[in-house]
Length: 285
Image 1: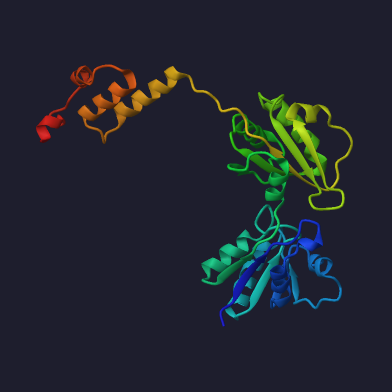
Image 2: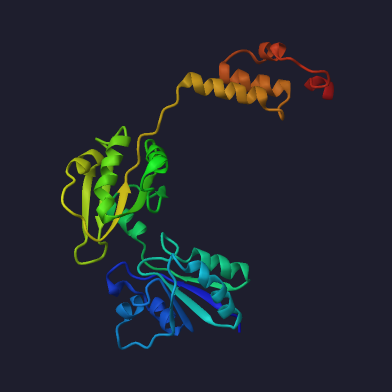
């Protein structure tokens, strides 16, 4: 029989969010790879008989690839369970999938909760275009570049952050964003758990109110920024250069496009273009 890798999405905190299919996939696997081998016990309870469990976390996922492929070659069904949420989303799992696919084995996904989707839905911010960033860079040039990329980002932005670094992130955002006074941010903490909390407001307001210690898992949802308006003259100049340098266009085609861009007569523009022998449209007819 062919082996199969099954990625199992698990609850963020509330055990009642575990689907019957996810439960069956965990119990029915031949082997469980777990980000934390204690998680399935906490999730299903002490009275459930679980398959053999092996740890698979960020630090040793690369070591599990060959073992996984060997087990799949033996026809085993291997389920991977991250500690909470969907595997691969800032959690281990991607390397396992890539190894299984490369070896020609089937991969199945049992959908489950994700902090990203849950936080965006709870935020009330636009969800038609969302940019997921995982964990932001902690410091240095990488962090500066990441913050700069958010200045005129027109999609809703989602990132995860450690609770003890969340206030610093908000303060960095307040300094980096030109619209910090009006741009909405939602800090979602402990999603689906007993102490679930959402802090809402402008980036500047939340950064100024930062105090006390945050605990638990944090997801930050940043609202869309204001689209940067390009200088019309710069736009026209770039478009003109692009037309002139486009080797696929014949002189007459360039003249027509330049006429649409500038409002000048196409015949006059065509006459001013340097036409190489054999390039004239009339000569090719």
